[in-house]
Length: 145
Ligand code: NI
Image (cartoon, rainbow, N blue to C red; front, side):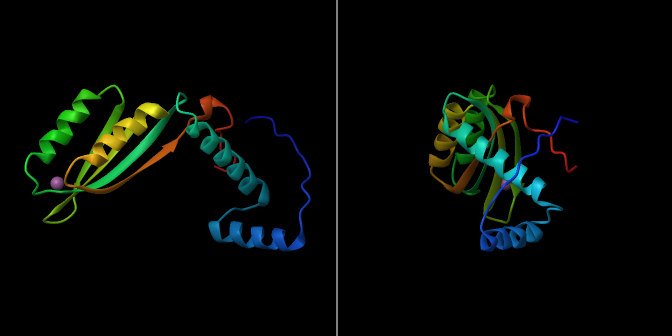
C-alpha cells in the first residue's frame, strides 16, 4: 500500500453537489477515490498525447465478412506487426459482420499508425482505438480494490 498524502480542496457548493451526484452515479464510495481516478485519467491522457511514450492500446473494428481477401489481408498485416500486437480476438457478429478486438503495445505513434492502417482497409466499416498507459508503475495502484 503506497503512502497517501492529504490535501484540502476548495470549490463552490454547486460544483461539489454536481460532483457528488456524478460520483454516486458512477459508484464511487468516496470523493478521494473519484479524485484519484480523475487525476490518473488526466495524466494518462496527457501521456498518450506524446507520440514517443510507450503504452498499450485496444483497437476494435467491424468489417464486412464477405469482402474478398479482406480477412486474409488483415491477418497478413497483423503478422507483419507481431511485435506490437499482443492479442487478437475475432467475433462473428452476424451473418455479414465480423468484429476484431486487437490489443496493442508500443509507442503511441506506432500504435496509431497500425490502427490507422487497419481502419483504412476497404471493407472495414468503423473502429476505434483506445490508448492507455501503465503509468510506468507509478500511481497505478488502485487503493479502492
Ligand atoms: Ni468472422
